[in-house]
Length: 302
Ligand SMILES: Cc1cc2nc3c(=O)[nH]c(=O)nc-3n(C[C@H](O)[C@H](O)[C@H](O)COP(=O)(O)OP(=O)(O)OC[C@H]3O[C@@H](n4cnc5c(N)ncnc54)[C@H](O)[C@@H]3O)c2cc1C
Image (cartoon, rainbow, N blue to C red; front, side, top):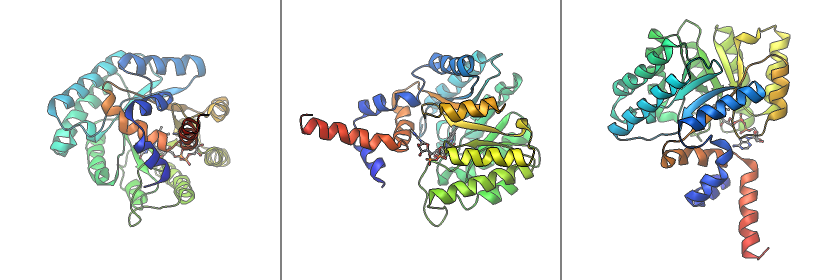
């Protein structure tokens, strides 16, 4: 386990909640809706609104998740700046892929009636096959659905080549989960080089890459590529997580006429938000130093 991950796991849950506050819109549907409206009104940033939750093992809780998404879709009528995203482990994968597909189908078909896009998020590698199976099934039926591919996985190029032959919106990211060396790259710089290549492969195959990274150098590399190759701005977009401080590059991209979309998660039940918050904190380079400083500060009376 990495040092930062170990520190995050030692943190008491209430402290995780405090530290993770910038990465989460709040509790309740209204918090997600108002954060997305604010990002749009203040800065012209699009959003993907996500109900936090994973590893749900109870039918009635899965039904609750579906209801929250249906309400969210209703509330998003006319708000063209927002999309939504879903996770298989939140929507019944424990019961099998057909049950999960049915739950997602309800959400995607309702969203489709108002032309609202839905992304099926990608979790760790035990779920890659099933997530792609669900995505392929949904894409056969609906135009308003996309998914996520992780450039660290060796399989991702094949997964790109196996995408449906109609245009797909694919979020391409390095992937947040540590994956074993027999299936995934281990060096971040390699993952980022691969992300750049995957983005090109997606474009070449007629898809719409959603370039999800906070790495300014990598973003600038993509900007130069798009410019040199005259790629129209409606063929791709940039995505970042709310809470990661990237105002200046976001402004630069917006000034260039690019779409920039923030991932805006909200929680209904705090216990389901914990895993997401811990991953965000482990990804925050300042966090470990900050926590250590507080601990050392307390123990030395400073
Ligand atoms: C919109 C979006 C959706 C995503 N969806 C998925 C998904 O479905 N599945 C999946 O596996 N992964 C997903 N991810 C996570 C992604 O795969 C990466 O793990 C994450 O973006 C960090 O990688 P990076 O490319 O930003 O590079 P990094 O090298 O990790 O980050 C670059 C720089 O950004 C800053 N930074 C990064 N994270 C933080 C943070 N939490 N707090 C403060 N600063 C930070 C740091 O300065 C860091 O040096 C998503 C990411 C985004 C932006």
